[in-house]
Length: 406
Picture (tube, rainbow, N blue to C red):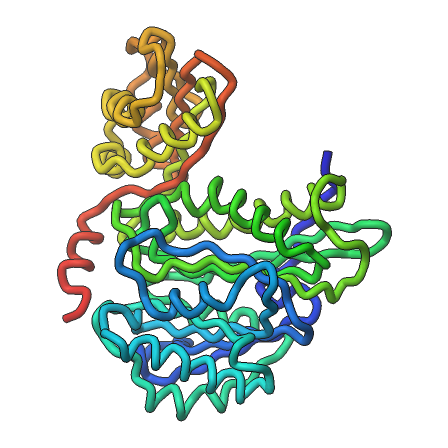
């Protein structure tokens, strides 16, 4: 059982006590209204830190450096992030530039370079324009209200920022978990072309912090898909500075369970907003698989369905072609009994016991026109449950990505 968790109005990555942020437009991206492309996030106090990263075999040096600087025995004070340039596939210069970025940020904030992490997102194969970094990083102002600036600084093809914060009380002490993320294309399970930065003022034991983040990522960021591709720069970080005071959270009690639930809620919101904001997308697709032999089976099956191009195009065309859902669940290769499967579209049942049933076709077509389309698959062979999120695939996605760099 967990303690009540409340939404923080206008919540963002600086809603947790002791965190400040800011951003600047340096010209790495093309100019535009309210555009920013370098951001700084800093804690007043040293933080324990947890992270998960891209599983691509091609990795940005910014990921390499950040991964080296986190761990149970390490502390962090700041994160510098840029958009518009991935700092990937640029040879040895990439690591040199990533280190200099942390040096510049550390000098600006008055913290140690070794306690400064770095993240990049944007076009692959382009070196970071370090002249711009040297000019603009020293000029970034960080404030307690700068979370939205940081959220804007990490956007690439996103149409909107993704921000949230929640809080819960333990023995009269309020603990807050906040976060921001970016992502719109090159999104596929096992994380995506995404950056996500989450913060908390809770005092969290490092091993439990990593366990909490990894568990949340498994159920959220690893369960989203836009286009089946996977990035070289994916980074999710969770920083805990303990500024709220109170007990150390290390697992095994109600307070720790509440913290884990708060992190899960933040990550779920940020992940869903990435799927909703998919390039060219008009609809969010939520896939629920229930009644599987295990939760892991349900997660795999829901992920396969959410990432199926045929399911995505059927939703876009408002085509109640349930055979595509059947196929997608089946290709997950989990154990199932075809004769027991039920399928629902926005709570309208269209399949029972593995076969089509009589339903009002126009009602389903109308349901597929909603901004959010919920596909539910009941396997009826166990108690396993899982969800995944994706979006429809449209002509706009093809047009946009056919000329991404030109």
